[in-house]
Length: 166
Ligand code: MG
Image 1 (cartoon, rainbow, N blue to C red):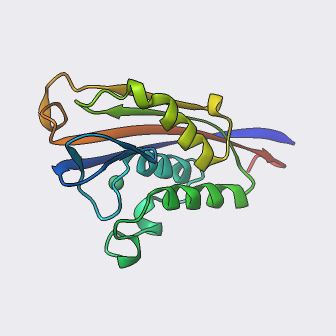
Image 2: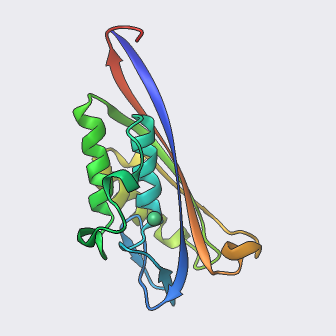
């Protein structure tokens, strides 16, 4: 039985507005603005959900959780990621690692990085060493640089024992 590896990429972006809580990877971060969105707008969980679904070629977050659905209004996005984890698990995959880059002008995420890693690892049910969270600014350029939006990029690697080459 060959161990086969599959990678997936995910991306998410939300407008930042006053009166919303900035939640990243399930961790609430004190800041004057937060993501506009139907759910809590957690870009790390949304990007990771798409990365996992992508690795298993299962579509994208919108197919599972339509933003027109009232059930997901202000939903905690851990629900979406947990669902993606379950979708890949039931198909026999294990999660090898994930890597995330958040692009956010402010606040600095360094003080929150370990909490975010732990939170993501808990939702994915994997060891913290398999979770990487990186942050950078947009150097003042564009909507992200002007603090009007934030973005996350994620990759996920999953593996499964395959009995054939198909
Ligand atoms: Mg989103």
